[in-house]
Length: 436
Image 1 (cartoon, rainbow, N blue to C red):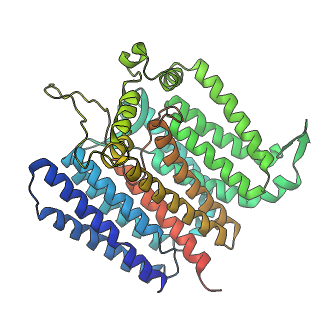
Image 2 (cartoon, helix red, strand yellow):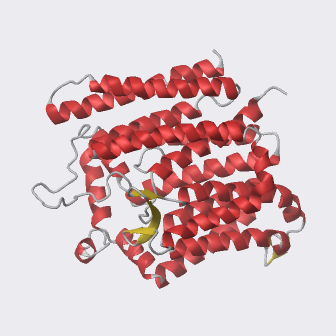
Image 3 (cartoon, rainbow, N blue to C red):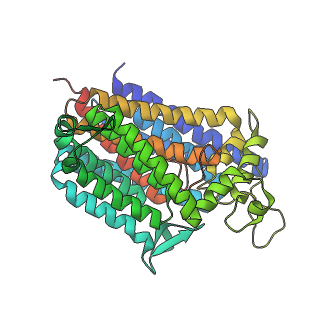
């Protein structure tokens, strides 16, 4: 069976998941089996088939599993968001369509994606400018002490960090492609530690330092961790020097300690992480209420979950509505997933993410030029780290931060940016798998 035919058959589970998910929600809400679920499944399958045909004619040799994996995650996300808020689910579906359109536009206009190397400094400046937007008065949007988005006309909140991550990865891949050899040849050992030459690594440190300072000013610790991890991944692949990564991790640990002990907002996050069930923190403003209730929700789900639409998200009889699980459609959607489909269902979601990252890294391994290899590595790494940051925060592996779960959490910028990321990975994969 050809790669494109495998992709076609792999899209069937996505449409079935939409149909089964909406059926479960409808039955739970009204105990009636509605044909609307079949309609939603058919519409979703038609969109996926149209995208598949587009890929078949434009990227014949691209990886056959990445788009179906993204479709499965997106379909599951639409069902979960609909279970929480039907209006937001309709908006999510609209963003899904827009994401597919930008997915196609990226493939058409950047068919030779290596042209992006020429504009790396323009791309990184635009990415840094996007990071600053949430902090601007009358434009920025703050939630739970962090400046995460920009308000657009019509009440739409746009998160510019979702697109900045792609721009910064493109810059790193392009710059390190040119300087990776001199970084290895010019490296010096100081006190037994190998360090890259400052002359060539300096620009990366300056630009990344500016990005980190902006993110700290925005109180967006999750994106900082995601970007920093992507930098170390690309640096390791470019130089094959583990010592560079070790030094980077040591610097990260030192910076985390300093911020955790000197910045009030981050200190509060650490305290809530270490003592989520402490009475004072549980009832404090921006305390551990959200994290603790997320842990309770996951524990209540057990192995097999309570079923679609069965989790209790709000306190009955309150006006305005009081949330037992704040931000269930964004930050805490993984807790809702675990509560409703159990540990087995949540593990299946994580396996889908792992497979997506694996296919991205395989595209990097097959790539024939350095820029393609570094670009695919960076995109796969930043995607995987974003999943780790949000899932690790909800499960209390690391402090909770406000990033979205790719393709699943409610958010227009998130789903659109991740479809652009998917398009770039497929472009790399198509070029790598194309016969010589």
